[in-house]
Length: 308
Image 1 (cartoon, rainbow, N blue to C red):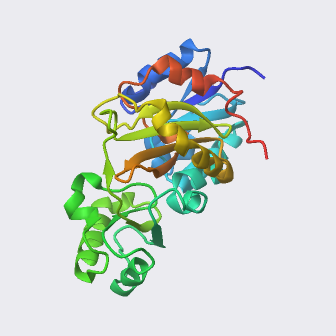
Image 2: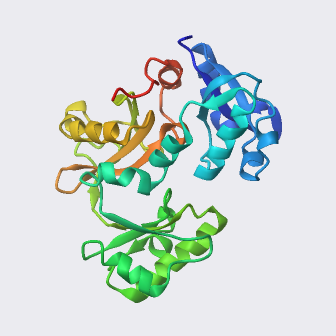
Image 3: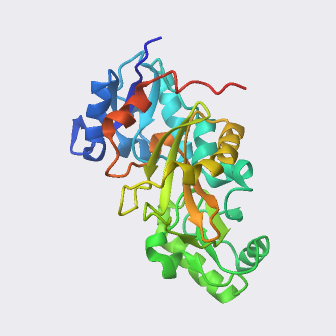
C-alpha cells in the first residue's frame, strides 16, 4: 500500500476544475506530500444528485479520505454508495462518520469529560413541544444551559438562540429553542440538544481558550488552536498532559479512525471536552502549519483501523 492517501476535496462552485478556495492551500500542501487530490461537487451532493457529485472522481479510485465542508450523515452515506458504484469508497465509513460527527453518537464515550447533555429528534422548523422541552431540561442539572442541534450551535447569536439562563424557566426555554430552530432552518441536524452550561476561562499563559486535538489511530497527532480563536498560541504541553489520558481512552472507546476533540479550561482548572467531531470536516485555525497538517492526512500509517 502506498504511504500517501487519496483525498476527496470539495471543488470550487464556480470552477469545478479547482479545489474550493477555502481548502486550496491545504490541497496544495497535500499534493506536495505525495497525496492524490480528486474533487467532489459538494452542492450537488447536498442537492441529492450524487451521480453529478462524484462525476470527477476517477473510476477505481479506491479508499478516499474526504476533506471538506460538513455533510449531513445521510448524504455522507449516499456519497459512499455512489463512490462504491465507481470502484471507490470512503475510508471513514458512514457509521464511523455519524458517530464522530453527531453528539448522540459520541456522547456516551465522553459523558464523564463533557458538559451534561440530553436530546430529542426534531425536524427542520419543528421544535419539540413545551412539555417535551420541560422533560428534556429536567434530565440536566439545575441552572443555565445552551441549545444546539446534533452538530452545531448558534453561539454567535448567544442571547437570542443559544444561552438559556435557567433551564427551569419554561418561557425562556421555549423562546430560545424556538428561535434556534427557526434560524437553523433546513440546516437543523438531527434534533435539539440541551447542554448544561459550564464556565470556561482563558489559560493563565494567555494561550487560546479552546484547543483542538486531532486524533488518528487512537493517538493525539496534532494540537491546534480552535478555528474561532483570535490567537494561534497554544497552552504549554504540561498544562494539557494531565487531562489527555481520559480523553485518549474515550477516543479509543468511540472507535473512529480520524477524530477531533475541542477542549476548554473550566474555571476550576479542569480541561473539559466541549465538542467531538469527524476530522474530515473539522476546520483549521488560520495559523496552522499546513505542511505539518498535510503530513498527518497523507500518512496512512496513522489513518488505519483502530486496534481492538
